Amino acid sequence: MKTAADAREALAGLLTASPLHTPGVLMDAQLAVTELVSNASRHAGGLTGFDAYLDACGTRLVIVVEDADPRRPVGEPLALRDPTAPGGRGWALVLALADTSVIAPLPNGGKRIQITFALRGADASEG
Image (cartoon, rainbow, N blue to C red; front, side, top):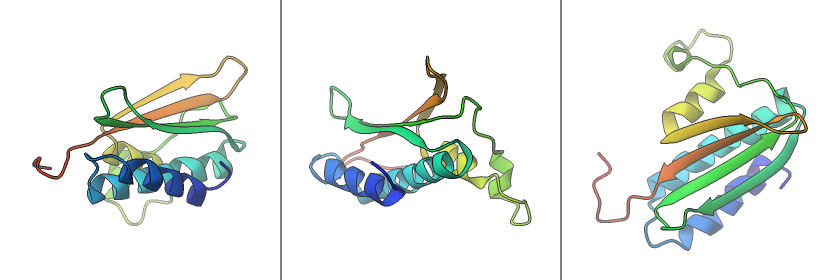
């Protein structure tokens, strides 16, 4: 995995094979992974790991991005509302899109960011 485009393609292949995927979840997950991979390259010393999979029940998409910088991403949710704010929207966008997010330090430096998305299925209400 080298680019955000590679990550988006991996998500599309994974989700289209699931009977519970919806186009909205795919679009949200692809936007979030684009931000994470781009931010790893731009601000965190580069992407050092990537994984995407469905949980054991097949009802949640799990995305894991690792980078070389131990610092936590920054970005305030209010940055999404202020078009004059200089940057800081990527992490806020990820937080707004994903159902859960966890940041953990890696033993040899850097960090792991894990986000999840619930797969709602075609018959479920997406509220």
